[in-house]
Length: 156
Image (cartoon, rainbow, N blue to C red):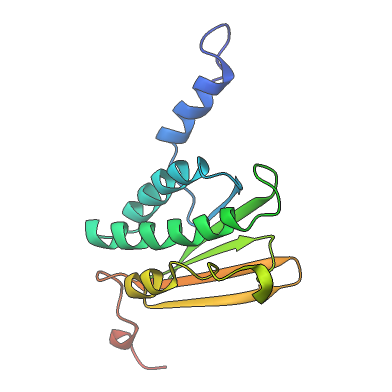
């Protein structure tokens, strides 16, 4: 039930976040702030573990997503204000994580853009950058070892 005169709302929220099962699809928004990355990593690790990812897979995917999120933070228009979103879901054993920021990736924005892409590509099966009207999405995909094998299903 609801806590009354007990811990503050913040404490209750943290408690609930730790015991509640995570949703099948993770859809989260974060401030464009480097401090948000720790919380993102923690949440993503728990979500991936719930989907049967191995320690190595959890590490690789988390590092790649953090790299994409760091790019989003770095290219936000103003610190702290613009949010980026992270959407993670499981497509028959393939983890698909989309990191979307509100910045646009114009070539003129410096040479650093795309730093981390070789790292992300080394950790994931595919990394795609999709420009959108109001920002940029990076779509990261990795199939889990324990994924159900579609080819073992009966032919239609």
